[in-house]
Structures are given as structure tokens and as C-alpha cells.
Length: 443
Image 1 (cartoon, rainbow, N blue to C red):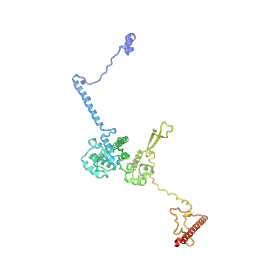
Image 2 (cartoon, rainbow, N blue to C red):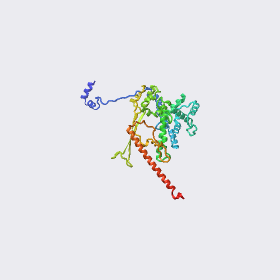
Image 3 (cartoon, helix red, strand yellow):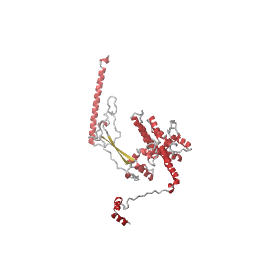
Image 4 (cartoon, helix red, strand yellow):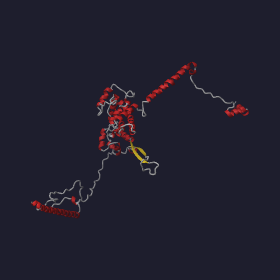
């Protein structure tokens, strides 16, 4: 068959032309494609049902699904925070530009993410009416009497109480502990949104669109509060509490050694001795946590690009600031296990020889007594001259010649002082006689 077609392509002019044009001696061939569909779809009596199904899926179900998704997405901002919560932050920051971290925590606890109607993950239990008031009574400086809305709502009070209990590491019931985890997990994102709202109001204030600009202390307190929530420690507490297995029983001994934070603990070489109350497994957890902590090195360089002297900054020039941030581990893993407990007996240090003290000056020596047994006096109401002997090292015994020379020098100095005192007394007596014998006194 193939040989016959090849012969025809060589002998027949039309077959040859088809071969050159279409690649087939028989001319162009049609290619047929098919789709495997169930037979009941293409049947004539089922055409109405098929059209109805297509209309239901593409004209009803799909628009409804898109509408529900859009309705839910329109409530959230870029960081998946409710827009109503952002408006709440903007209102309170504009109302009070200067806030303490305690006030910031109070506002964040009033976020609508903690309200049952906006977040189905939040649970309301009948036991909350008993457990939450009892928890609030055990919290210091809670601010329960604040009547600002929504700060006084039930969901806000519960969220604030659980955040305080989380930072104070208070034991809770299983139900409240589950709610605490849900609330604390959401808190860092809300604090980040609080800082963003403060930055937006700051830009509006610099543009002159609002009267009061948020204070830097407010934003700094919010950022510091985010770290405190993550570390589960209260404000003004020791940073060492963020380390595992480190409690108040270890904070005081470490504080007496001058260790105030993780950096101080890393810098000492006998940290295993200081943490001897911990087991080996607990000590390894502390080392692993120190290895994961960052140590940041910031290098800032300012320059004017496309200038002859890039380091010289003139007026109205465009300055380029290049900041290089290097992240290093707080504890080098290679030196993490270099500190070990030394159980050996300490060896006594060699005795130190006393340092040779300098010679005592002549005016620092005690004044010598006169022949009559009285000490040298300075003036009419003078007393003994003070001599400083406190905290002096033991003096070496001078040589006999040096001792005689010093004694002779001191005798000469004492004689000179006596002569000065005698001449002073003679002048004083002469002035007294002259004053008494003057004509004014004679009258």
C-alpha cells in the first residue's frame, strides 16, 4: 500500500503536488477531535435540565460566593485587622496623643477582634460571670472603674484581664487559659496596627491636617508592650524572665552579681555556677534560647552621591543615608559550653610583698616637742598640726644616715617655723603698744 502511494507520488503529477503541499499524496485530510461526555447530557430530553444546572452554578452560586468573600474581605485592612478596630485606634490616639503602656494595653484590649460578633473564635461561657470578676480582683491597677466606651464593655474587660494575667504569669483555669492563648496570639498584630495608626496621624500632623501629633512615647510604649506580651513579663521587670526555667528565685542572686539581662549573662564565664540550681537539661534550654537571641550591629553612613567630596554635606543637598544591620547570635554556639563548674580545690595565691612607699614629706610629719615639753603652736590659739596617717602602707625602715638627715631637716624646719612665730608675736605686741599709746585712746 505504501509502495503504491509512493509510486503514484512519483508518476502522477497531481499526487506529487499534493505530497509537496500537504505531505500526503491523497491531499488534505481532516482531523477529528471528540470530548467524552455522558450520553444523558447530549440527549434531547435532558437539555432543559442541563441548561438549568449551568444557570444555577454560573449565575447564582458563583456570584453569591464572590459577594460573600468580598463582604468579609472589605472589613479587614492590609494586615488582616478589622477596619473598625483601626478607626478605634485612630480615635483614641487623636483624643490623647500621650499614653502610657498601661493605657495602650487598655485600648488594644477593646479591639473588635475580641468581640464575639466579629470573631467567631472568641467563646463566651456562663462560667465567665464568676471567674473573670474573681480574676480582676487579684490584678493590681486594673482600672475597672473606667467608663469609656468600649473600654468598659464585658469583652474588653475580659480581654484586658487575661492579658494582664498572661504578663504576670498567673495560673488560670483550663477554660480561661484557652481564651488567654487566643487573645495573646492576636495581640502582637493589633499592637503593630496601633503603631501604624500612630504613624498615619503623625504624617497628617506634619501636613497640617490635624492639630495634635502623637507623642513618640506613645508609639515607643506600644512597641515595647509588644515585646512584653511575647515574653510574658510585666513592665519594669527583669529581662532575664524571658529565659526558660529562670524565675524570681534566680533573678535576685544574678542581680547581686551585676547581671541585669541576657547580655550580662552571656558575658560572664561562670554562668553554670550561677545557674547551678538548674538541671543539665534546663541549662541546655537556657543556652539554646541565648543562641537564638539576636545581637544587632548597626552601622550608619551618610553621604552626598555624585559629589567630589561625598563626606561633606552642604546646605540644601540630598543626603543618602545607608544603614547596615548585622544580626549575630547573642551566644556563639562554639563557645556555648565553655563554661563548666569547677569543683577543684582553690590554690592559695602567693603572698604579695608590700609595695615600697614613697618618702613622707616634712610637712606630713608630726611636729617635734620643745625642750620644755610643749608642742609647737602656730599663733596665739594654735594647736597641734594635723598629720594624715590613715590607710598608709607599712613603711620601710630607713637607713641610719637617711634617718639622721631627715631629723636634721625637720629640726631646721621647726626652728624656722619657731622664728617666724616669734617674729609674728613681736610685731603683734608692738602694734598693741602703739594702739594703746595713740592720742585717740589717751583721750
